[in-house]
Length: 316
Image (cartoon, rainbow, N blue to C red; front, side, top):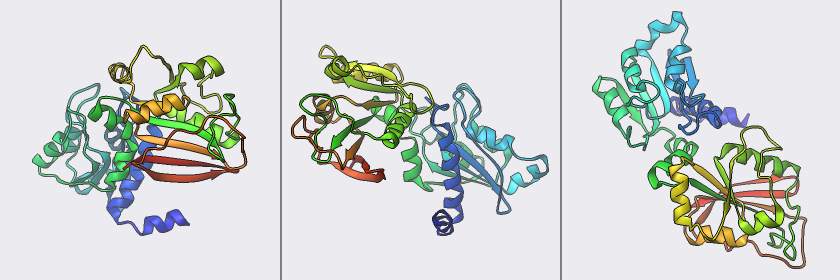
């Protein structure tokens, strides 16, 4: 009922862009390293076609949306509106430009969630569509569209991965007890943690954590690919590591190390998101305190899982 009420309070452009985002999210594993994109084609107040970018190297969202239009609805395209969560591409890659496809289909209007920062697009797709005389609206649910592809955007704008710092702590703020690892997570939060691993490219721990705990760093409690495993050592400074990861097209990185490793990233300003799990039942007498929290972090979300809380923070 809440979802229904939310949609009722949206205008049509927002409603159909929300559907684009729902579709796009299905590409969380297959679309990488391409962005996640959803597309919806609307005519006579109904959806006549929709699609998303399923897998890198295959059809883009717009291609799949047009392919889903039934033969009897083809006549409606001249009066249709195409909604797409990310600006249609305007260059030849593994597939032809989607902007050209939209122009050939002769639709009346295009609504774009956000501009693509990728150097070979950056407004060119929108410009090409407008030059063909098609009305274009840009920026509908823009922040949500940007958030969906935050990994892709960070990688291309900052030439480094999107970095997620992650730790679990007791109710009184310790991440271990007398230097020994603690079971802080519960079954639900462990599953969420492994889901996160399946959605990101790589995971990093410090050499002390690796040698002491021998973590598997796999997705054994979820499904999907295991992230690349990285162990931080003293002979590879963080700037060099960031450059290496960029060159190897690693668009996202989870940092799960101990306090020293986590604070090294915080002090260098190398973080975009922080995820803190707190077990409100567990207290310890002494141990390693959780990292010093950066002042520029703001709350993105808060969820409860059987006595544990999961708080997500992003940079202000």
